[in-house]
Amino acid sequence: MECREQIKYLLLQRRMTLTKLADIMSERLGKKISQSFLSQKLANESLRYYELKLICEILDFELDFKSRK
Image 1: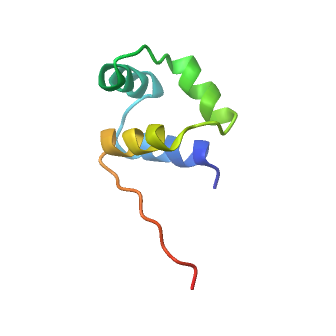
Image 2: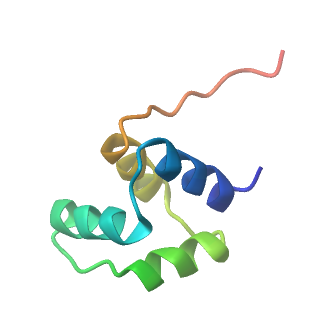
């Protein structure tokens, strides 16, 4: 599953829109993040790690890296 699809799934789990997520990210980062900008980053797979961490924090999920072996 692509990052975009995973984040959309997490948003559904929390009953939150991409617009609301962008608004909260704007507040936390202290700069304007629009829904279209965030959507474009997801579509282009250009999301930065700190942005992904923030999204997980806002949605109350944690990143977990596991070894394949």
